[in-house]
Image 1 (tube, rainbow, N blue to C red):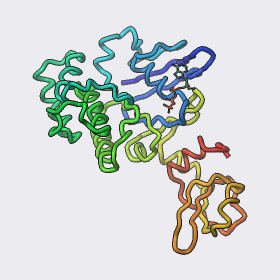
Image 2: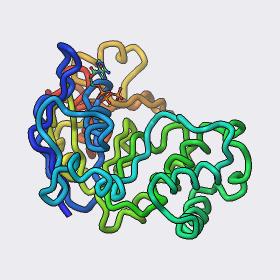
Image 3: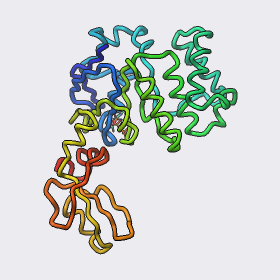
Image 4: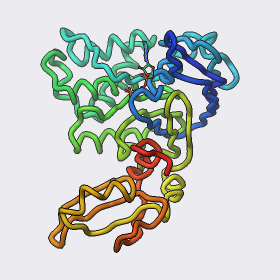
Amino acid sequence: MELQFHDVAKRYGAKEALRGIDLTLTPGVYGLLGPNGAGKSTLMNILTGNLRPTRGHVTLDGQDTVSMGEAFRRRLGYCPQQQALYPGFTGEQFLYYMASLQGMSREDAKGRMDWALARLDLTEAAGRPIRGWSGGMKQRLLLAQALLHDPDILVLDEPTAGLDPRQRVAVRNLIGEIAGEKIVLLCTHVVQDVEFIARELILMNQGLIIRRGSPHALEQELEGRVWELTAAETQLPGMAQYGTVCGVSRQQEGILVRLLSAAKPPLPCAPARPDLEDVYLFHFGEGAAL
Ligand SMILES: Nc1ncnc2c1ncn2[C@@H]1O[C@H](COP(=O)(O)OP(=O)(O)OP(=O)(O)O)[C@@H](O)[C@H]1O
């Protein structure tokens, strides 16, 4: 299975939200990372068919996804960010409704629905109206509906938004587990969400893909650029002159500072192991691309 973006561009008036994206995805989990306004939602909305590109097109195994129409939509699961749910429906009614839109029979839907509700810890709540649900529960219900028809392609827009740490880990594990032969495109601001499950990270900024690679490869690129030192309180305000401050934590012996800098800062410091947060700050932080 091969999903391809061919020179996909999108303009909103004078604003170029996407500036010619070429991207090929094969089965695996991809983390789509980028700051606000990078173009991530626009890219996902074009993939799901909610938005028409100004230029370019998307193909699945060589076939134009817009021309495929219903055949493409049946292979796609989409978990949107907005919690636009029907408040008067119970969770179960909502899932049956979504399953019917996917063309599933009630019997097929029942089996998948029970599985999804159980996996997302919603079985007990399923009979209650959604209006009384918490934000985290609604988020998990949106994920459940995206999984109902066992799609080949899953598009997840901030799937862990509003979840507490325990639910976040559970959702992350579920995504990793069901990924199998699917193409999963997961958009997030939370690097920990994709650290362990993404085969590849796609970094976007200003309507372009600026970098892609495995989490490990992107971290390795920063070897020799991340430093740790213990500083006194009075030194903190001046730290930014030595690089991007990517961590400050108070320890017994002083304040532990993590700095991102191409050259060794002229301070007593030791090299530290780069992590994904460093990768994010390196590419998107203030003074990015040192
Ligand atoms: N309907 C619209 N009309 C005008 N400009 C828009 C519209 N939708 C998005 N934009 C602009 O296009 C750019 C890309 O927006 P997009 O929502 O795709 O970014 P994003 O990476 O998803 O951001 P976020 O992380 O905040 O969701 C932004 O500058 C945004 O302001």
